[in-house]
Image 1 (cartoon, one colour):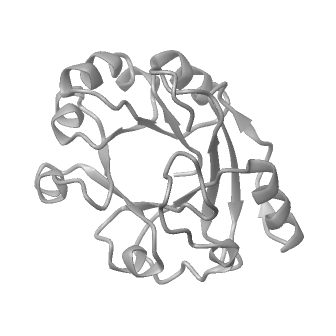
Image 2 (cartoon, helix red, strand yellow; image 1 turned 90 degrees about the horizontal axis):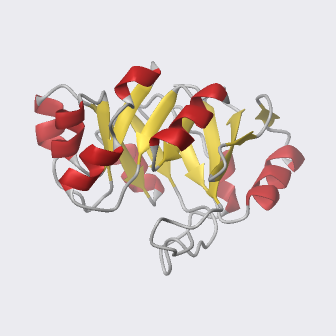
Length: 196
């Protein structure tokens, strides 16, 4: 995993692949049928394909994996069916305890997409992630430019250019232990018109 793009439609997925995404995560808040309908064509894009929150949709679409939040069920079923398993973590303890192939960690700062959610704070950007048994970590941030500036000020190595999919911005970087991480900020409204 080098660049993990979270998208909600095939056109954005295609743009993300052109921009360098190596993992596509389909994030659609809807029924399994809606997720499956929106996921048509993803398998043909030649990247690792992950479905958000829905093990049934992941299996029906032939996805490589599924991403589940802390309260989502299906982890055992995903493992039994051989799916790559991503988990969300909002605390360091959740991250360490996670049975996951990769983690989405955050929010680092307060974000309107998760009102009232506990935040890890800027110190999380310097956490030693080495002991975690995962391949990559995505940090969802509310203010992309501020997060990027804090990383640069801390001397963190930013990898390549900012990736802008037309829906979100992403910046790959490595932490002090050499682990691959990604800043992620969605700036476009969801299909129902709500903002992240």
